Amino acid sequence: MPGMARAPVVPLVESRSGNIWRVRMLGDYVNGFLVRDPDGQVTLIDVGLRRSAPRVLEALGAVGSAPSQVTRIVLTHAHADHAGAAAALSDRTGRDVDVHRADAAYIRAGEAAPVSGVARLLPRRVFSFAAATVGEELVDGQLLDVAGGLRVVHTPGHSPGHISLVHEDSRLLITGDALFNMRGVGWPGKYFCTDFRLTQRTAHVLGELDYDLAAFTHGPELRERPRETIRAFLRRHPSTAVSGGT
Image (cartoon, helix red, strand yellow):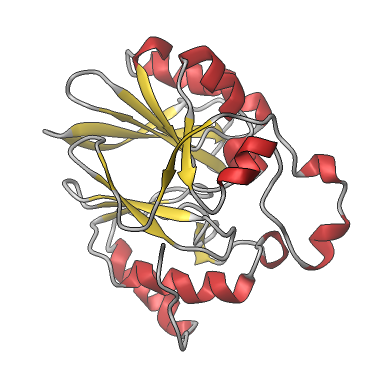
């Protein structure tokens, strides 16, 4: 696949409160994120497929950090392409996994949040991953003590506990799978959502946030007018209601 030989990390943010990189798990098709505080503490956000653990460790080395410096592992949701390597990296770093409380049971069980439609006919092993110990159960609006503050934005639908994240100091949005950026901004696969209609509704929250850079777990970041681009997409897909977070 194209892009597989490229550098494991893409710099996103360099600020007084910390540095943030996008971690290429599978080219630009599957991404995680690495956040390093000024004191050297590292937070991993989404860790890819089960086989992605070496890629995450390579990314740590590429930015001059070590597994012993990882103090937090955060997942945007309980799907195998985001939580697949969580158990292995939890074992390697000694850190439990933080996830929204509505997805916590799936992480503990090593089972993906429910999918819909024809995706339910796929073998269960397609969606499974190694169970991991959950540390903190996150809630909407929570400010994580990461790089000066990382805000949790509950955007359910893709999974019950799906979250997006905002680094308010640098004005960076991480959409998770609320939106993709594969050949342009778009929706995640309909049948890989627990509730696709809810995904569409809650994604409109992202148009109301303030940010100057938008990063995606599927696709490259948007550096030029990201808020305007996302809002334009959402205007073309209007929603009549936005579900509140918890």
